[in-house]
Image 1 (tube, rainbow, N blue to C red):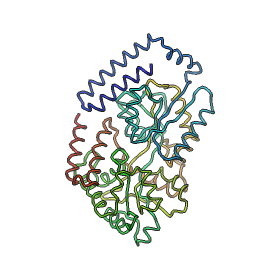
Image 2 (cartoon, rainbow, N blue to C red):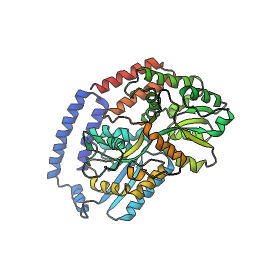
Image 3 (tube, helix red, strand yellow):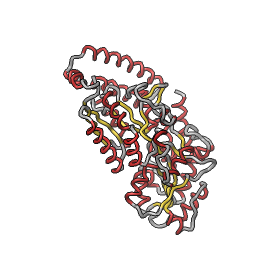
Image 4 (tube, rainbow, N blue to C red):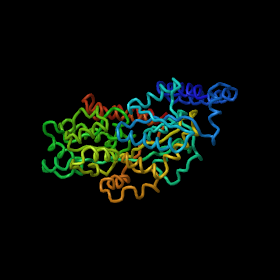
Length: 435
């Protein structure tokens, strides 16, 4: 059944990825629904060895067998923590075995498409929260409404798992962005922590010397870069869907000014957030925008580095990005066993273990309320959550994100001026929103 279902999902994903227009989308959805019905019919009459094996394995409460989980965390400490938590689950019972597989962030969506066509989909994934609605609309996720209680979770993370009132995921954890700064470098340059865009540009220029750049954030041309860049847009009061506005153009101009002044290296277009952190802890950056999840690694790898965090310098208003991941179960996979693992993984002890290892804020308010008491750095991130903006939820968010990331990349490389880049991005965004 999983093989046939995967083939149908692959047809749907490939059609949506390469056709990408609304009229065809409706046709695909209708076709997909018809094919699902055909799959269900075929499944009813199927007597394959695979189905027999599934039934045989499902003899202990309906949950047993192997569960494969895909994730994209590149940090070694995060990977170790996930594997440790999985091992605890595997040791706690004998019917289900979970195994994790790392897939690089840049390849994650592509691998899902390839995996679907090759019958190599996992049973469970941990994905960037703004992507959940898009995958749910493709039909790739199991509907777990009424199968998991999310009543104690924060509304924002739950909304990122919801499409048309149905639940297609469970929030893993939340995070946001702040300005990290090297206290010694700022002191040597005779600077205070910047609070406005003008101050940031001034301090970044004064801290730039030799191999040291004053400031950077991840600017790769994908969702990771968009997540960081949008803090500029939101600070002007514009939304993510208003790039060709006074605020959107002003945000692109701010990035251009940082690049043109030499305070921000062009190489940031190739830096992931992990790469940016490595530049910071290596002493090549005086300031960076980065997230909650970097704190454990920095404290472990450079315990003597004198650094602090502060709100991201603002234009009109304070702004940050709401990040985090969601668990989602693949439809047609080992759904019941995956759900049993999630019930274990979201228990307070397991959740706190992962949140502390990741540097995340629990999406479960009952767990989060006392999570970081007395920790000045983490308390700053929790305080910033009230200014953190979510991306989407919008099924077509990846298309919007692609347009935004292309815009700031073209400005940073000098391929486009802010006005032209904004107009080009807005044309794509409007087309997506008007489908």
